[in-house]
Length: 297
Image (cartoon, rainbow, N blue to C red; front, side, top):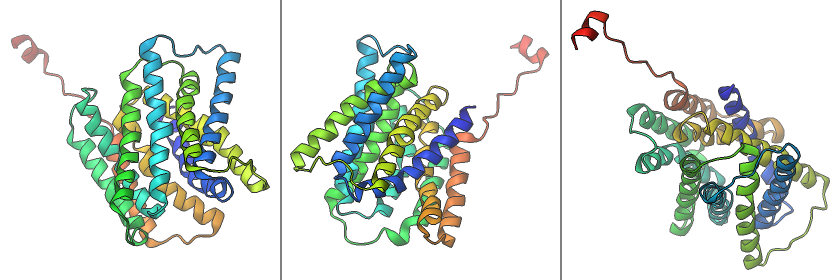
């Protein structure tokens, strides 16, 4: 069940890239993201109240939800949108591929996980795969500010997963309902500072994209993410982000008629191999001692 939910999250998250293209074609970026998470938070809050799921209670749980939401929904999107003003989307995909490696390092630093060579190897293979897919499209002069913003976005995504493991959690629906509020407020504040226009969509395609991003791309995706996070390690769960760009490339080929290159096939194979090694491969259980040896010890 956990693996199935993980795969569903990957499909939704990868498709988000295509939906965001339609949304950004008409809506200002910070305003579009802030509107998306505001509506998703309201939808999740209603669901939490109707089904009596119980919102995060107590200072530790509320602190965790605020940290998780501010980093995962607010800061990461803010840094990413700042970077994409100059940086190509392919370069952003390569930086996001660093999330599993960064999550592993941060989880070790926080004492959540122990270092393991399998996790490191899987993360490096996955990064190599994403590089193979997008290297030919990541060129061009990019300033140090955009590069640092991409790195900061990846760090925020990684730390948000670690934070969700560090603090007490409520039901994934209720937890995301609270967590999306500070993220949405941060994005809306940045929208005001940037002087963006708060106009509602006027095209049907934008409304469809926004509806998808709210219902599936925000509510379903992040509920699924927390569901998996509650059962896997933070570093294993973070491998979903490496698969997002691969799914986006395939969906783009199906929806927008983009060509499927040999680089996508080869790099996608490497990414899947890295995800398997780092997150999905079964860990061998320690071989028990023979009964006589156990008694002797």
